[in-house]
Length: 171
Image 1: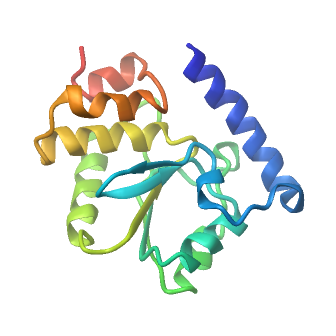
Image 2 (image 1 turned 30 degrees about the vertical axis):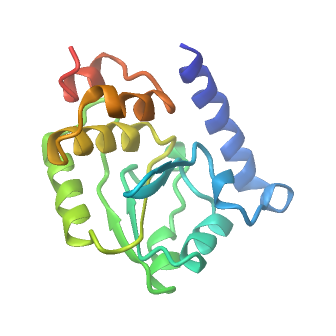
């Protein structure tokens, strides 16, 4: 439950950061909401603000995959694609409904990871909850890693609810 509370308050704080960016600007990418680095794979996070999107591009990330639907309620940056592609970053948008994740979404995620496997990748959604679940499933189902070795990375962000436990076959 504490991870849920942390994510709710973090999401609200992230909205204030979008409204008052000059008070919250940092040139440290680890300050992006719910930042988590998956060793040997990619950086993950909640929704970066405009300043952070520019930092991601300036930090030589070549691909950004966004799993959040485009919605003000989700904290989306409406011009995210334009911001990133103008800096030469490949932008991939796979909108995943938090209440109903689909295996077709996951398949698109895997396809894009494989297409860009030799590139520096950043993956985000609104709060890193969709992402952490997709990364867990990718590492388990595609890379063959065991739950005991990767579960801590998922739990660092949240404990999946029933919908996501079912999606991840954790029941």
